[in-house]
Image (cartoon, rainbow, N blue to C red; front, side, top):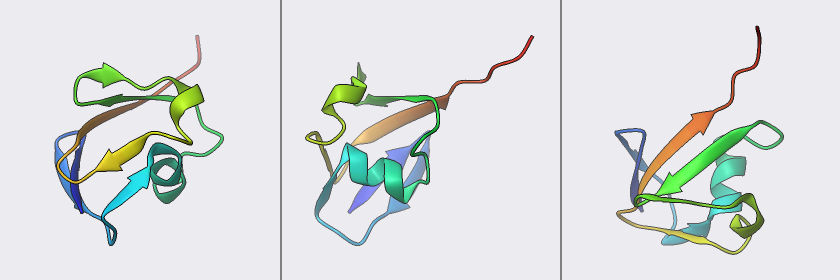
Length: 67
């Protein structure tokens, strides 16, 4: 499966995966971030159920704190 993440094409060894599995694969679990899939923001409550499919275009943005 090939998906585009922040403009870079990434290959994964599967047909599809949940957004939650992708978060684990990218080592983002426990971090503050937002994911946009094909132009739509994914609510965190949908991460366990939402399928990421071949050809999806994702933008992942991490929150940065400080003052």
